[in-house]
Length: 360
Image (cartoon, rainbow, N blue to C red; front, side, top):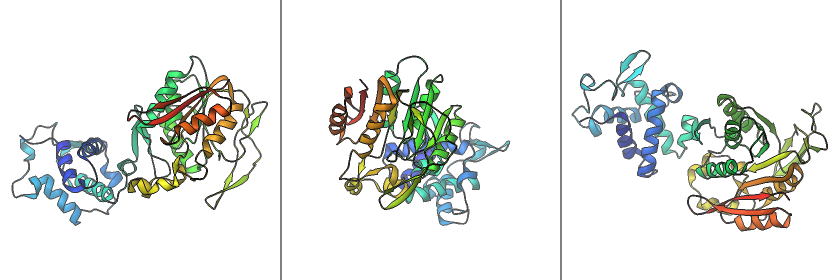
């Protein structure tokens, strides 16, 4: 009995990238690529780097047309049910191994072998049931962050709330909160204008209203006794991080005591931890969203805790995703700043990765 396309993909990927990915990861990759192929993925990926004359293409075509590249055809299209090997392409049925589809798969494999994350290759990923666009300008959302969002949703009181996501990146936290709590007023900021562009697209395509703005959280956050709209005058400040000068334009001024929750997944990987990280993360994901100096590991947590103590209503909630080796330090820091009911929670892998605190 012939194998279905996803099984073919899994076997091909197993042959080509088994030294990079585990069997479980290869199955997940196969499912993702199979879905993308059905959605017209070849036009997005087959950029000519892997054309039908290339060695990579010929290896892929040989595999899909002949089992493992042998002499016996892997299947005869006329003998296969319409819903198995054949896919609808522009109103006509074409074998899975046509030039476009094989070229797309071959190009994906070429990029996977460089260590490029598959989420960047296909340009999107799933997070908490939503499809989100991702680019190298933003971190790829992780399952641990989904757990943090679940905790936030469990703890938020009913009613219309005002929420702030600090360091939004792809907008994954803000978009999910806005989707599940549509009556709430959601704000989200990031130092990167490119990240904000990605986040805005994710909010728009998921039908969520989020107020995004560019803000370096190490620069002064505009806080006012009265909430007012977009600041018309440009107020720029400059802060040096890793020797790079960043021009920051505060976009909004917030009223003290106006937010019901502040949530953040800030940079928390110590620079000294880089050696133990996977190459695909180091070489492809934005370093400014990952790393913090060893000498100031709580830099962002302290800053966010300070301005959140002013922004939060009485009883307001502060949530952090944290470095698993710094959870107790973050908890102690929050207690020293007067927060109460500070809880450090473990993720599904048993690592202390989330903190929640309450403003007294």
